[in-house]
Image 1 (cartoon, rainbow, N blue to C red):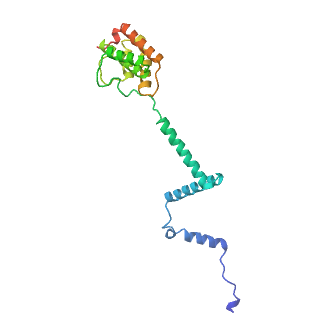
Image 2 (tube, rainbow, N blue to C red):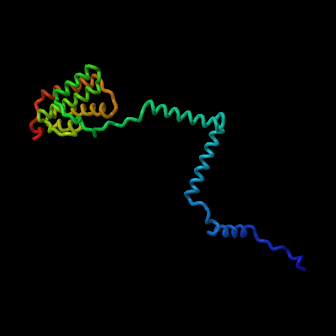
Image 3 (tube, rainbow, N blue to C red):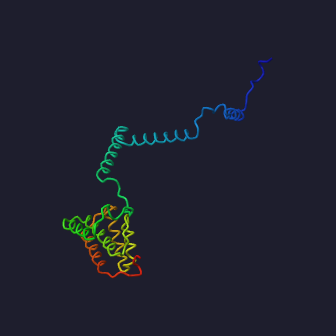
Length: 211
């Protein structure tokens, strides 16, 4: 009779393969998240696991971890407020002179006044301006608004080749003080003053003088 027939069975491996083929059809994956969302979900899962592990290892659990994080943020903010933004490396993009032209004698007088009060930063800047203005007044440099300290040193080295290295060093000192956030010293000022005085006494090379 029919009741004596064995039940119909499907082997396990072919059944699994058939199920996988069926589930791989596009109709079953229309609402699946795209690759970006899958990656984002994995990222947030990783963050959650990391946070959970950190809270388990921190005294006080999650609350203790939050207290530590807030303390770190507070310390970072205090350091930023105290130290300010990081200083940039010196640059010669800014012009050497301001808008109001002054003579070399006026710049020297201003430099001496700053030096007398121990304001070495201002003294160095004014002395460098006096040096360059003096070279312009002697027609060893063409007067040019917007000239930088590096440009002045490079151009002045042509009529004064013996002072070329010291002129470049003076330009670096000026840039370090004016734009690099560094502090000048009395030695820096005296070195620049000596260069200014020597440039006054040096006979220029006619081959390098501007025409």
